[in-house]
Length: 620
Image (cartoon, rainbow, N blue to C red; front, side, top):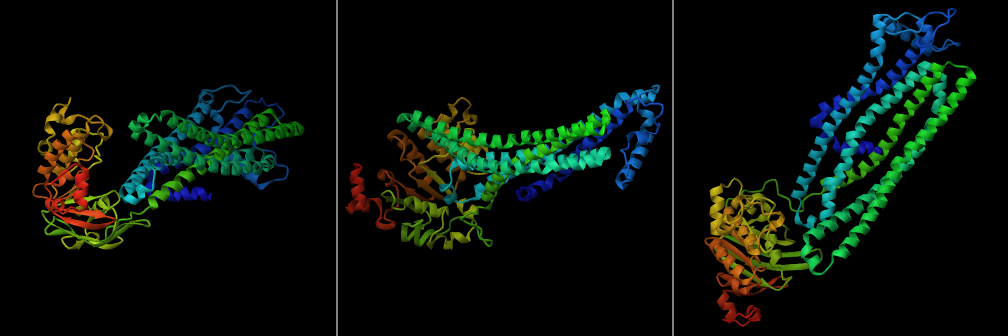
C-alpha cells in the first residue's frame, strides 16, 4: 500500500489535467465490478425458476429465492424483503418452469443474459479505454517533463551519467509506470468492487457458508506479499542489466569505425550476449514471481470448491444452489488473482517511479539568479579575473588573469591538459569558477541572463554536432526564425552553397544522424554556416580545423577568416599556422599564462611557442 501511495503521489500532478477521463474510467470500473455480483444473482434467480415446482410447494417467488432463516436473522429478513420486491417487478418478464410462456417472458428470456453481458462488457471496455486514454497522456507528459529537466541540467551531470541509463529512464522506466496505470488503476477499482459485490451475492444465497469460505482468504495473501518482494528485487536487477545493454549498444553504434578497425565486433557481441543473458535471467525471475501467484490462488479456490461440494451433499441442498455457489466461488477468487498480479506490477512500477523521481530531483549545477541582468551585446571586453578552477581535486586553472578587448582576435595555445578547453567552458558558463570571475563588460557572468549572454557567442568546434534534419534545418539551428534567404546567404559565406546545391534535394536533403553522409570538411562548413546565421559578436573556435586534411583545412580556414571579420574571436588551436591572423596569442601551461604576444613576437622570442611551431615544421 505504501508503494501504491508513493506512485499515486508521484503522478498526481500529471493526472490533474485528465481527471475527467479518469473519473469516468473509475465510474465504469465500479459498474463492471458491480456487474459481477449482478450476474451471480441473476444466474441464481434464473436457475431457481427453471426448477419445476411441486403442487404442494408454496408458489411465492420470495420464498423460492430467499435463503432459509431458521433463526430469524435480521440480515436475511431484510435482504429477502428487497429480493421479493425486485422479483415482483421482474416476474412478468422472466419465464417460470411449468407456467405457459407469454410474449413478455419470451422477450425477457431471450434478452436477460445478453443485456447483462452487454452491460458488463461495455462497462469494462469504457473503463479500460478511459483509463488507457488518460494514462498514455499522463506518461507522455511525464516523459516530456523528464526530458525537459534533463535538458536543463549542467554539463557535469552528463559527464557522470551514461547514455543508456538516461534512455532507460525516459523509455523503460516510464513504460513500467504506464503499464501499471493503464491496467492497474482499472483493476484496482473494478476488482475490489467485484469482490464486494460477489461476496454480497453469495451472502444472499448462504451467508454462513460465505463467511466460512473467507477462512481461505489469508492463505492467498501470503504468496502475494512474498512474491511481490521477489518481483521488486528482480525488476531492480533487470533495469540495471537493461541500462548496461543500452549503453553498450550506444557505444557500439557511435564507435563503429574504431570497432571495425580493431576487429572488436566479436568481443562486443559476446559482451552484448552476456548482458542479454543477465537480462533474461532477471526477466524470468519477474515472470515467475508474477505468474506463480495465479495458480496458487486458483489452487486455494479449488480447496474451497471441494469443501463446497461436501457441504452441499451433507446438507442436501438443491442443484441450483450448487451451481450458483460453485460459480460464485470461482468468480470470487478471480479478482483476487488479478489483484495479486497487480501487486507485482505495482512493485515493478515502484522501481521505475523511484528512478524517474531521482531524475526530476536533479538540479542544475549552473543556476540563473532571480535578478539576472539582460545582455544585448559586447561593448568593451571579456575578462577572466583571478580565475581558478578544478575538476574534483585536480586543479586546471590557477589564478588566471586575462582581458580580451572587443574586436580582438585571441589565439590560445598549450599542451593537452593546460586548461584551453576549460577556459572556453567557463566562458560559456558550462561550469562556474571556484574562485575569481569571468566578466562580460565588467559584469560577472553569474549575474547575467544565461540564454542572453550565450546568445552573444557562436561556437565552431572540432566536434561538429549535426542532427538528422535537412541541411537548411541544421543551419537554421544557429538562429531562431531565420529565413531561407538567410540560410542560403550563410551557406555562401561558409563556402558551402556549391556542395549543398549538388546534393539530391539541395537544402532539403536530410543528412543523416551526426551528418554521416557528409565529409569532414562539409560538416565543418555547415557548422560555420550555422555560426554565420547566428551573427554573434563573439566567435569561439575550438580546434575548428584540427581533424581536417590540408585541402579541407584551407577551404574551411577561408570561411573562418571571413566569419572572424568584425568580431571578437577566441581561437583554440593545435595547428599553430592557423593563428597567423590573430592579433594576440597566449600560451597556457598548467593553468597559467606563460607566454603572451603577437604571432611574430612569439616566433621571434625563441620560447615555448616558437619550439612548438618548429616541431610542426613552421619557421619564422
